[in-house]
Amino acid sequence: MMKRLKRNRGLLCLLLAALLALPAAAAGTYTLTVRYHRAGVDFSLYQVGAPAGESWAMTGPFAGYAVVLPDGDSSAGVWRTAAETLAAYAALDGISPDSTQITSGGQAQFSGLEAGLYLIVGESHRQDEAAYTPIPALVAVAGDATVELKAETPPPEGGDATYQVVKVWAGGESQRMESVTLQLICNGQPDRTVTLSAANDWSYRWTSGPGHTWQVAELDVPEGFTVSVDRENGVFTVTNTWPDEPEEPNKPEGPNLPYTGQLWWPVPVLLFAGGVLLIVDRVRSRQKGSKDDG
Image (tube, rainbow, N blue to C red; front, side):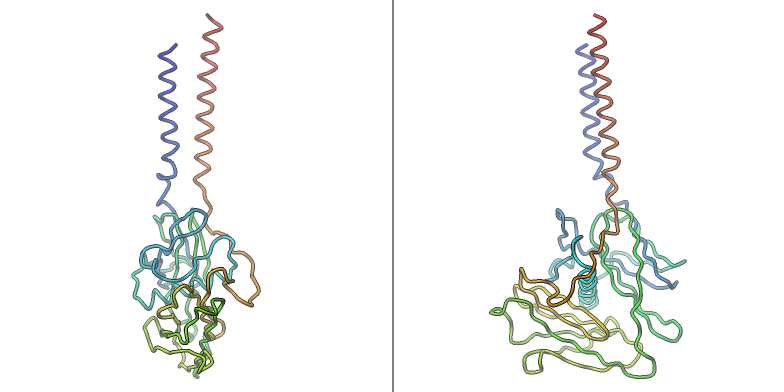
């Protein structure tokens, strides 16, 4: 009887060890599908965050940026703004993507991904005599995920478009700088730097011919502040936020953006645990039956 019990205990230990190893074995097997209406468009994928409890920790070449990563409670606007901000820094600093894919049949797939927060950036392309640029997106991957991307509405062809960048402070009145320097980026390449201050009402305007894509990145973010860049109809709003201040001052909150990847690994874990309990129950039943026979 004691030998049988020892064998069963050994089997149970092996089962528990395999159970604990399940999450590690499941990592690195996820696929992210990007849906886009046009074929032959290049998409780049960057991992910007790694799981850190219930949130994300900036990772790799993105770790040094003063950008707050969104979470499951963040609004759709916060997710969009964070993606725009990180995409501008990736272009400015020439960060190499982790993977690139070209759309075919209305989609592009990135496979072998570990759990994390990913930035998707698409290349500009022409369609119907107009230039289109996919809107950057952040996607939380904790399982196979699918995201559908749309393109910016291009400015009218045949004339110049007017752009504006506006600087906004949120909190930290005593810590604010007298001026900030911004980098304007055209078609993924640095174009010019501009300095904003009270002297120019913290604003700058410029014009551009058709077919160009513009981004804005803040250089040397003031210490203690975070930065976000929101773009709306040719207006870039650069916000420096002091800790514990709202990320979108004076802006209504949009609907929450759910995680696009579902966490599936607990399902086999629970099934495995159920199997272990069945085995333990069977061992106890056999032991009880042996005693009754005796």
